[in-house]
Amino acid sequence: MSVEIKGGINIAMKVPSHQYEAVIAFYRDVVGLQPFDEKEPAKGFILGPNRLWIDEMPHFSQAEVWLELFTENHERALDHLTGNGTVRCDAVEDLGEGFRGGWIMNPANIVHLVREPDAW
Image 1 (cartoon, rainbow, N blue to C red):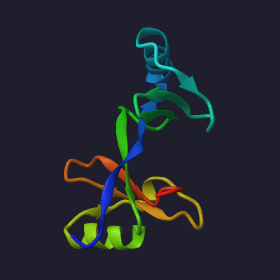
Image 2: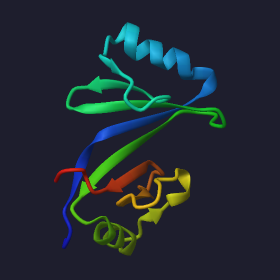
Image 3: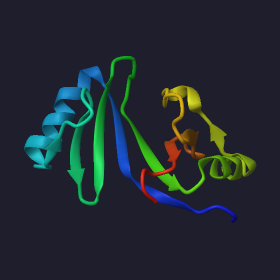
Image 4: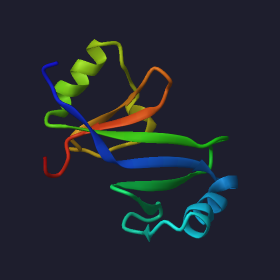
């Protein structure tokens, strides 16, 4: 492979509104993970070396887990992935102009953010 792809630190859990508060309470009160609020309205928890982001999704009927992958060159990595049959799904969430990354789905339809980290 001509491009290196590594696991990222962020895990996003997209949770429907009818389950959102219970999921927050579970990680905060039952599991006891350390919370953080640096990107409100998303709620976050320290999950070992990872960060678990919990986003309320009013139009979802069930929760989804989204993962992050790091790469030195997102364009090469995304070309490599799509060249090997990976589906791009950039419409799932706007990343903003100039963001160095994009969205893909694995064969089981799990969304992944492929991005260049702030510091490699």
